Amino acid sequence: MLNNIRQIFPRIIRPTMMLTNIRSSTSNADKSPVSANVPSGLWKLGKLNHIAVAVPDLDQASSFFKNILQAKSVSGAVPQKEDGVYTVFVELDNMKIELVHPLGDDSPVANFLKKNHSGGIHHICIEVDNLEAAIKEIREQHIRTLNDKIEIGAHGKPVMFLHPKDCDGILIELEQA
Image 1 (cartoon, one colour):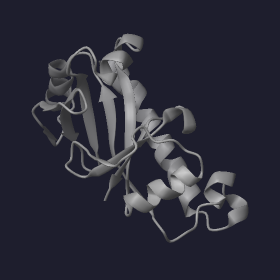
Image 2 (cartoon, helix red, strand yellow; image 1 turned 120 degrees about the horizontal axis):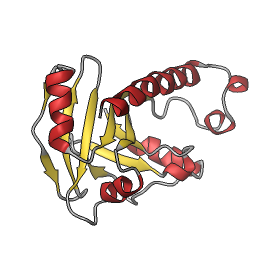
Image 3 (cartoon, helix red, strand yellow; image 1 turned 30 degrees about the vertical axis):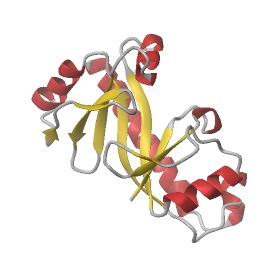
């Protein structure tokens, strides 16, 4: 478990810095071809809300964050039946870590853990100020979503997942801010 955490935290800093650098650019010449075609002003990418980590042992992972790392708070396990997972939220000063564990054998997280026995980063969640506009524009850029319609996520807010094959291998959850 500790080795997984050591691997996760260096990875948190780099993507956040990259997202900040990409979004702070104002010249179309500096933007990637995809972001250069997104009209400005319709929606805005916000802060990193959480990083979801698939864990094979939810109690052990929760205990690690609570007792060893002394996280600000660690919630109890909550079944998310519609998503096929249990979730535990670990609150840090500037964001959350969502521990996810399968709720049954058909869970997408069960499949993830079959490939990654010791667990690992499952997805990142980024807030947007206008989810509907963001999804419309993203789909126009030929980025697939995992669902046809916006759903309510574990925080009780509207969310949409972007297909990892269209996002450089990263499963991205967009959440209405």
